[in-house]
Image 1 (spheres, rainbow, N blue to C red):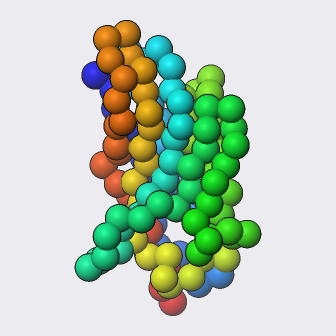
Image 2 (cartoon, rainbow, N blue to C red):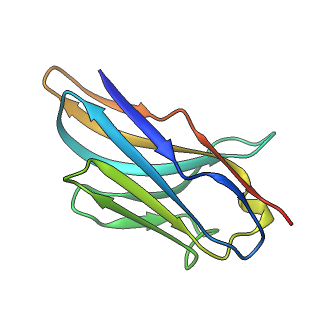
Length: 119
């Protein structure tokens, strides 16, 4: 079994910064793409950023220039540095990962962490 554990959410004022972390654990043979998604109240879950196993990032237009995704393969961890936060960034943020274990290959999700941007 694979678990993804997120941390780093919280309340921040507009213009502020937060750093989210998501650590994978379990019987993992390999982690391919990892990513961050978010879901605001009354809206569908949307992609924020993804990063390939080789470290190539991809961003939603709404966060380009403000958010940075990175990963530490040795720690099996993906990060999301969020700068210049806006009230519209308020959402529950979920990480996901495409993981090969020793018995299967699947997409796993974390439990979510709340980010609230408000003065």
